Every structure is written in C-alpha cells, then in structure tokens.
Image (cartoon, rainbow, N blue to C red; front, top):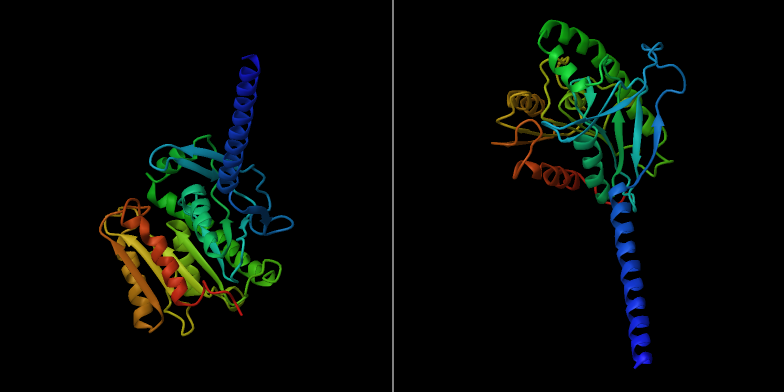
Length: 308
C-alpha cells in the first residue's frame, strides 16, 4: 500500500513540475511578445542639438489616465529613434511620429502600439522622439491644457518647437536612408506616418520635403494642416494615405479633406478614409480598422512584398 502511495506522490510531483514548466514557458513567450522587437535607441545628434544646445533637462514619463490611459513622454531634448526590427524584413521602413501638441509624446498609443502591429508585416519601424516644449511641472498634461487657455502664447510656443521638430524629422529620414543597408531597408522604400501633431509634421514634409529627406510615402492621421506652409503640391510629391473621424473636435476633418483635395488636384496618388465616429484617436470600431486599411494600401503599392 505504501509503495502505491509513494508512486502516486512521485507521479503527482512530476505532473506538477511539468505543468509549471509549461506555464513558465507560456509566460515567457507572452512577455517576450509584449516586449516586442525593439532593440535599441539611436540618438540623431552626437553632440549638442543645433538650436537647443543649452537644453539639459531630463526626459521623463507620465501616466495620463483620462483620456489616454497610457504613458506619455515629456521634456525630450535629444531627438532619437526607437528601432523595431521584424523577424523577416521586407525592405520597407516606416518612421512613426506620435502626437501630443508638441508638449508631450503619446508614445504608447501612437508609437509603440502602432510599431508592434506594423512590424508583423515585415516592416522595419522607427518610432520618432522629437524635441518638445519644456514642462516645468510634474504634470505635463495639465500644464499643456492650461497653456492652451492663452491661445496666442500657446501658438507662439508651438511654432518655435514645430520648427525644431521638422528639422529633427528631416534628420531622421536622412539618417534611415543613409543607414539603410545596416537596417536591411531599401532606401527607396522609406515612409512616414504621423498622428495629430505628428500628423502635422508628416503633412508638412509632404508639402515641403527636401530631396535628401523625401519620404517615399506619407500617412497623416487625424492631422491639422492649417498652420503648415502650403505652397502647392510638388510634381513628385509622394503617395498619401489619410485617415480621420468626422466627430474629431481637436483636428477637424476638414483638414484631412483639404489635404486630400490638394493631392487630388495635383494628380498625385492619394487615399482618404473618413469614419463617422472615432474622435481624436480613431477609437472604437470600425475606426480602429484604419491600420488594416493602411496595410492594404501599402500592399497595393508593393511595399509589403519582399524586395528583390
């Protein structure tokens, strides 16, 4: 009888150990997937950043419960790229520009999450961290909201930072193109997608790109274009993908329609998706499906195929 009991105990112990090992393996797989394929952060300037040489405040993170329910970054003074490398690179690269009114960077919702989706398609992703206005309190979100109350002062501050951010974006595009071989990227398959303020950066470069930093495709998502320089669409302007929601009160959908009409009248490739609901963030279905439409658009242009 005792031998039977010992046998049962031994079998039960082996079963528990095997179950724990399998559970641990599953947990490790889950968290490795959650950590994604981010490998490193690349700073775009080796020394002091031109135009903000004296900026020495540390970059910080802040959790915004409402309306984002996500972390944001603030006090970014050293522009950089977070690199996400796919298992099998198809040769296409996308630089993601998160928004945040040039005061914070919506790094989770408009950066990391988008990167984790697009990298599955074989795209090499660079999440772009550009210079932001300095926050002098420990609540950058509230500080940003308070500063909006003085619209003229807010716009003056944003205008200065936006110029710096555009320089940073040009630097980022040039860097990815120059280092394309290192990242297994085709130098003629580099695009930019931006959200909100990051969408304004993307739209600005769509109108005003310079040859050495011209993206091959651009996607301004719920962006504002009323404050950028629009001197006509260039004959070789890149293809555009645009998405927005009718009920967006922060970035009126008229901005996206104007952008679409400019490209349409210039006879340049453009695609526009307007959702009746989704607000500033394209939240809820079907607005959240915009990323599937973006992937389909990329596939139609041949950017999801393995380069030859």
